[in-house]
Image (tube, rainbow, N blue to C red; front, top):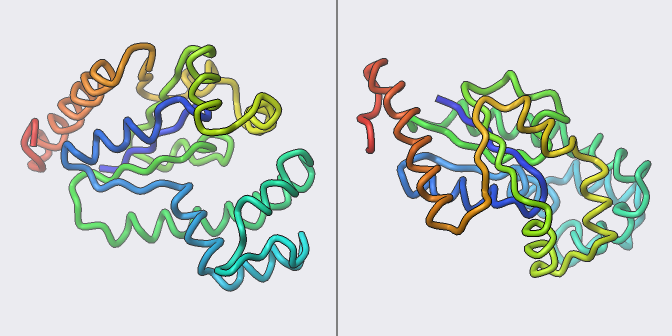
Amino acid sequence: MTIAVTGPFASGKSAFVGMLGDLGAHTVSADEIVHNLLRWNENAISDISERFGEGVLGEEGVDRKALGRVVFDAPEKLSELEGILHPLVHDETDRLMSFCCCEVFVVEIPLLFEAGRGEDFDHTVAVVVPEERQRAWASERGVDGGTLRAIEARQLPPEEKARRADVVVENDGGLDRLKEQAEEFWAKVSGEKSSEGGVEQGA
């Protein structure tokens, strides 16, 4: 069974995916894939340095902070970067799914619907959060209002993500409430697997 988790920046997606991992899912993050591509993938590094200059290079591959300073305030440059990275992320996600021997594979994809991948998974989950809480969490990560708005500009509105998803997780409580929702969702998908002769519920 394959599951994609999406949602706005600083909504708690990673925490929710981590909880599913604790319950027994094999988990992957699209951001982690991007990080590895920028560090190790020669084609990605070459294409990015050719397009955005050698100033974005670091000791190992592409320096993410240097690259961010170049693209985040320039929508056309950000689109070009996504044009380089999205096909590689798509291919790597599919490769990991094909080689995974686990019963439940969960991948966190912030731009799931924006990239047209909503139909590629058995279940899609949107984690949404109240705006004031999102901005507080973004600030804790050192992301100012301008950068947050730039990130949000390339994403669908949270309500649209929620509308397109099979399951919506309202991250409007604490971690205990988020864990409860993770456990409820895990019980649901485990029950589906059990009916197919797969994992036992609660495993």
